[in-house]
Image (cartoon, rainbow, N blue to C red; front, side, top):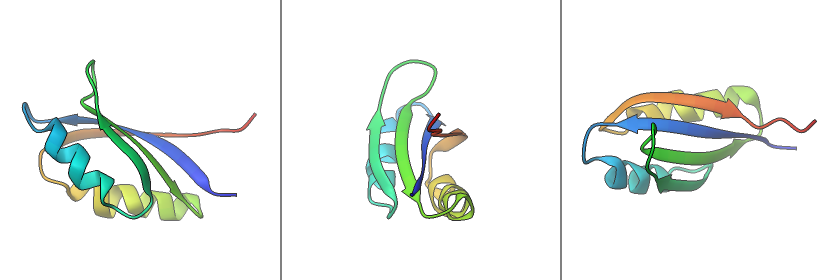
Length: 78
C-alpha cells in the first residue's frame, strides 16, 4: 500500500498558479490545484514509504520558487 498525503501550500502573492503547475510535474504528485482560502495550493502526493514521501516534500516540493510555507497531512485509513 502506498503512503498518501495532502500538502497544503502558502505562496507569495500571485504565484499560486505557477507553483501548482510546477508541482504537478513532480513524480509522485497525483493532483496539484490552486485554491482560495488560507492556503493557495493543495497537492495530493503518494510514495512507497513515509521516508520517500518526506524526501518528495523536502527535496522537490519545497524547492519550487514562490512557496512560503507547507503543511503535510498524511492520509490515514481507520
